[in-house]
Image (cartoon, rainbow, N blue to C red):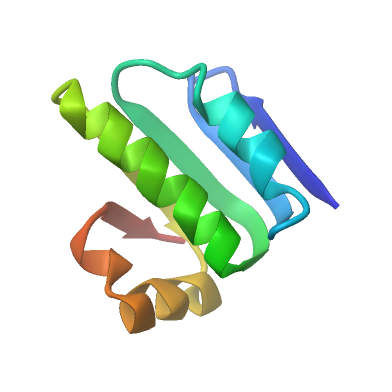
Length: 96
């Protein structure tokens, strides 16, 4: 199951599995975000290439407006995926 929402600090919080089934919902939610975005990934258990694509397209769109996507509470497993894919060079990432 995948959940996405905004917390009281204005951070986007994701949990569950960000995969091909949940990617369209995540993309639709993130398309409504303007300016900088902090994405709390503390509850994210899994991310697929489709999920990585959502993050990349959101980051590119926000960077065009001189903002970006900052990822926080990234667990070690998800952090490994970012390192293997080279995404750790694209995003500001803060580990859990």
